[in-house]
Amino acid sequence: QPTIILLDNNLPDGSGIDRLHEFRNVCPDSCIIVISAMTHLRMQALSKGAMAFIEKPLSFDRLIQTIEQVCDENYIVHS
Image (cartoon, helix red, strand yellow):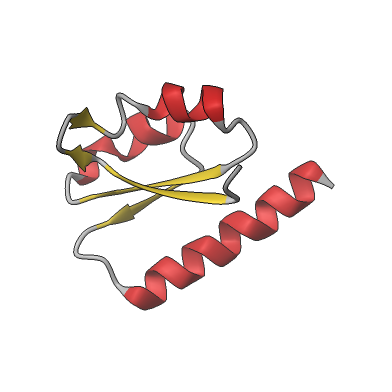
């Protein structure tokens, strides 16, 4: 089971946010980070189970910062 899942909202077969429940069912302990240019979807992604939301265009520094924060929070929750 992956520790972190980077999930783009724009998938070839649908919306990443609409598929969040599938990832939650298969990988309940994984930290899911949604990536999208559609910032108005932030709250929807978080309410459906994403641990974080990153806006496109994606900055490497922002990605690393978010992964570190999510891993720290997940460690605290699961330890």
